[in-house]
Length: 319
Image (tube, rainbow, N blue to C red; front, side, top):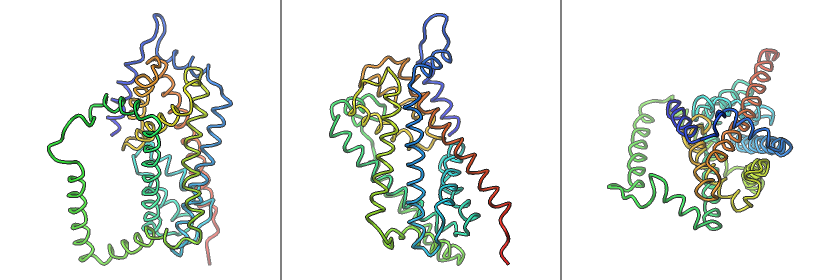
């Protein structure tokens, strides 16, 4: 996956054609200098607020399992998970559960069940966002999809949904066999199921929905702040922000470290094909946008890791 990310990044940079006597790094640096740093800082504030709301939503899901946790612990664990995801795709989902176990003693299988539930909710939100994007910008998005290698114009010998059903059936059968023959796995499954079903035991289901919507609204606001921070994209308009946010969300969902490579390939393609932006400007914009997001995650993740380490090191043992 790291090799694939590197390959996609290399292909994206190959499309960055600069003037004579100018190199690619200088071109990207000048694009950074032209950006409005106030809007980039506002984007960072919106990002941290979205992470805080996500940590609170996760805490709400864990509480009904009989393992209440502090917001500070869920936030620190969440940010460490984001940091790990930059190196190991989806590895952060496990690492944040383990960090929460170290801080609060919450069984990993229970917290992991709530993480899976969180991801299911996020998938629903993403699908709603994509549906809204297609409703607003149908013609442009349809034209964009037709340019992709996996466009609908190509037929498949076997329907993709049938492959997913078959894979789920095989995985389910294997899980049932293992559970019948391993008492320890039965215990782990029981805790995982408690976490997965915790949404039905929430004290305030309405607040959970509000947090879920607010998180994705803040994601959109982050994209808006960054887009208006650059003179090359500032005039695109709100519908374009929605479209590019949808494309970016799909790219970030790819199982690559921090979406590196997929984001740098799809989003510039959308900017060029849908909004006739110069390819060099589109690539520079995306590299800066993604680098800024990644830097925020690294700083917040490292700080959270250090704070967690200090809390664990200086914790007074229980008698």
